[in-house]
Image 1 (cartoon, rainbow, N blue to C red):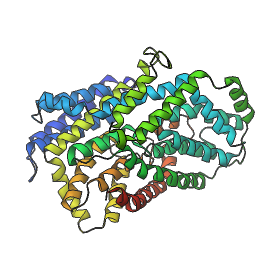
Image 2 (image 1 turned 45 degrees about the vertical axis):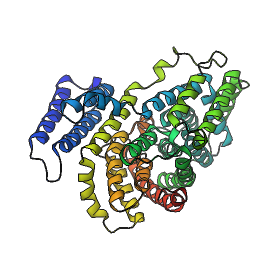
Image 3 (image 1 turned 180 degrees about the vertical axis):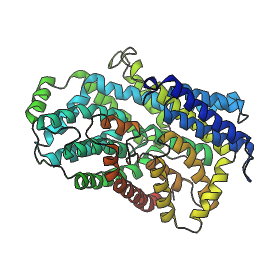
Image 4 (image 1 turned 30 degrees about the vertical axis):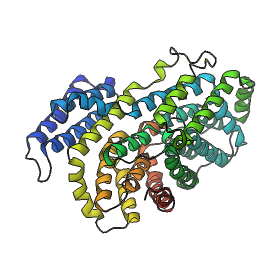
Length: 468
């Protein structure tokens, strides 16, 4: 429920309840082994997350409020809080939204989606796979939300043309669940695919001093995507058992594609700049420029007079500033949790569960914990800021490279596929083709496959990259 749809009395009651919880946590005795600052940092991220979930206040304002409370609670000074907030992920996210907007402004997004639809030749099963794999590949370099929003209208057009009614069609359920899940999977492929990837790398570097390059992440992420998407496609098809084998409306898709005409100059310019940007990402180890810098420079190219794909007027409203504020405040909160010793305190308790276990078992346990934590805290940046510092502590205590546990956290926080609480599946949930419990039916199998594939790739490829 959006804040504007909630009564003032209900919003006030929720806000007062969360404030009372924070006060209660603050006055309770500090547990053994935990500092006062550590207790306050955990209480702050818990209550901040609860406000985000309840949506009683604007996301961006809550994020800034949490940041300003850090010096008030003596967790750090204001300059330190600002320093923790202004991480490279901030510039990456702004630039990423600019790049995604360039795709939409040129019209290339619609051309790509129509081509994918026509490639299925009306085969329902083939369309599901093409849409899922297409969404995953595009999400490796574009925002997950942008990819879903560009493919959703074409999917809805084909479903309606075929007579697939919302709430009744199993094929509609398969498409509307498979599309956002595939985008979430693809978002793991490269650091550019999701802001939580860059956030994970930022928190890992801040807490453990370990730098992971774009290429190292992609060497793990891309195989996970290519292996996991076909498995999830099979799960979705088997769970929902679609009632149709062929689709109507292909002639509409072909007519719309013809209406777009030949590829225009703006589209060609976007492709050229995007290829150069991908090349810059892949050669990070050569030129030494981190992804935040190369992505920002790439975004600026679209505004140059000789390129002129974008201008500030058609771009400023495409940047989701509230999400940027949330992600960066979570980065600051994660640093405070680490600096205050709260991460080490929690890690001591979790390490009891993991003590003596092999890396494989630890990865499986942590993966399942992260996936099901979405049911309690569907805020991915918050999960990263909590669990990455904790896993770094656990890994260091057991003589492991912290990256071997922290990077899988970055992969697993994308597994928001149990119920549509994350923004990506919520977009498709709004179509009315599936209920929350119907997503859970496939989600439990998808999560298990997700954990196993991540574990497999980490154990086979990470040692060759020096990350194990």
